[in-house]
Length: 285
Image (cartoon, rainbow, N blue to C red; front, side, top):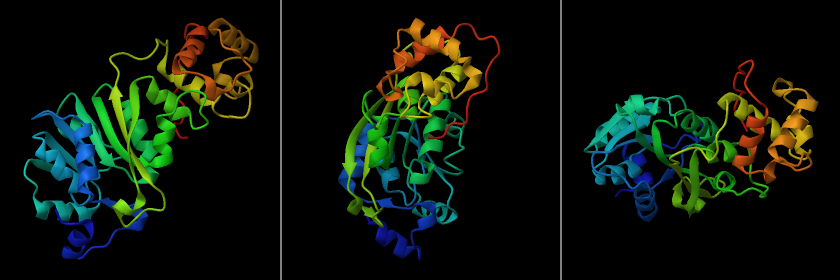
């Protein structure tokens, strides 16, 4: 397989730093990433940001039905000229794409080497579309993967860890040093695998309210749980929130990063029936 440098040169192109383009051409790493999806022949898989098509070739070799979603016109031209057998190339934005719709299937696997600035939007997109995403494998900044795979009590544990953890099992499966990319990014990367659970870790009454509970809890990480959760007045009065924590069996003096997803769910249920449906909060870390 040609290196990213060779393909770019052949097409008269250079990486676009503003787009966060760091191309992975390491064949061992690419094979590991493709294998991590455990794709079956004919299974639909959506690749986000295929770039020069290095991972795309390994995905196609599994016999899966690959839909490659690319936004960069130059990369689209490259992919069209390379004409990888068994791959359908679609112009689109990875941060806004409907995975099932673009693949033409009710359930899909998703994979991609994600630009760092699009990490959170795409992960929240996966969360929103979890009914259609069986699993996902993403190459991300190493510290982000460590955060998403963190256990309660770890300082890396945060909002996205809990929200994704309610519906997916998260694994850090591979570290990729910066030198493996062209051009090398400033930090190392890692590969995250998300596998959808058969059922959420715990029942909740209202999804939007659960999300607000988690976000408010992490709004002020240095504060105790009760003082932090009070930052969202839509959840209730300080008195009702204190009562909910007591009913859920959660010490109000704890901090958010010590709570398991099941405990956040218990707090949401303890708030009682939803009298007025709350809109979901803006999801950003």
